[in-house]
Amino acid sequence: MKTTRRNFLVSSASAAAGLAIAPSVTAMNHSYSGSSAGRMKLTYEPYNLDLKHVFTLAGSSRKSTPVMLTRIEFEGVTGYGEASMPPYLGESQETAGKFLSLVDLGQFRNPLLIEDILDYVDHLSPENRAAKASVDIALHDLAGKLIGQPWYRIWGLNPEKTPDTSFTIGIDTPEVVIEKTREASMFNVLKVKLGRENDKEMIETIRKVTNVPIAVDVNQGWKEKEKALDMIFWLKEQGIVMIEQPMSKDDPDSNAWLTERSPLPVFGDESVQRLPDVLKAKGIYHGINIKLMKCTGMREAFTMAKVARSADMKLMIGCMTETSCAVSAAAQLSPLAEFADLDGNLLITNDLFEGMKIKTGKITLNDFPGIGIKRI
Ligand code: MG
Image 1 (cartoon, rainbow, N blue to C red):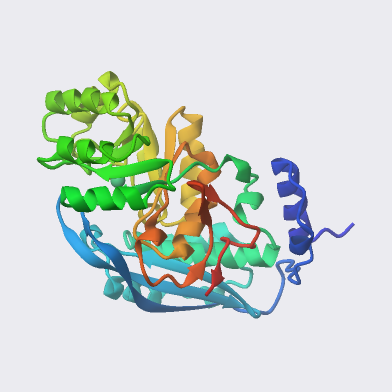
Image 2 (cartoon, rainbow, N blue to C red):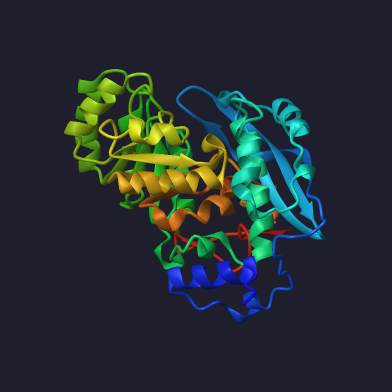
């Protein structure tokens, strides 16, 4: 009996997820079987995301974020991808453009050979992680469209299990923080960046308006572990539910000391970039924050998630400031995570895609094949 690649994936994925395949999806026109004379074509263009509010971290402030938009075309089907490159991470539209000009996808005849193709892309340079993610995301979008399924379904993940996303309240004057908190009333978890002198004031200001759970991201901002532990105990009293990267990524001993004593789960973010970092984080943090732009994309992110879970570590899925393209790609993985911080597309005024939605605070996946987006 001849079984096409598409049919195999559809039947195994739907069995794994226990899901019925929606008629609109099975009726997709693409029935790519993996053999054709077509060639993939990668194109890319720089784009700047305009932020709704000035974004302040422990070390910097900015009003826009540079990204690189990619697309891979194959036999009339287009997969979309994106590299988001906040300046402090060291990549730029220039470095991404240089890297992407090296990528020759024309040598591959079968877009479903994702492992082969992304191994090749990864070995083109030691870094360029966001640029690699832009190829990875576009390839997953293309492959999912050829298969006719969204990635959460191909991976066998249950879309009912998506977490709430947190929504970031940026550091600002008390008046603006109160206004932003009021505007965020649809979210079930807020995220606050700490690691400055006014940490307690920031939390107390928000607590004047709402009692909703708060996730705290210190971005390595705390310098003394004893003070940090006192602060975590205080934060627990204030209804904080988790702490992200409390101390320097280069100080695993202090982070481990805190984790051992902390009454709240502690997550590594800056400490955990790629797959080899996951098991190194065991014992130093309770959990890890996976982001596509750190780890070169969906292929590695999915493996990291599985490794973390197999090692009994907690999982969070995050993003940079991104359009709905990269955010929706990350959302495909979110049923595996306890916490999600996928609000990057909500912080910009010039999104180009329609994708995953936040409904009553919860990540809601759609049925679009690939990474779940449509170009607006
Ligand atoms: Mg973080």
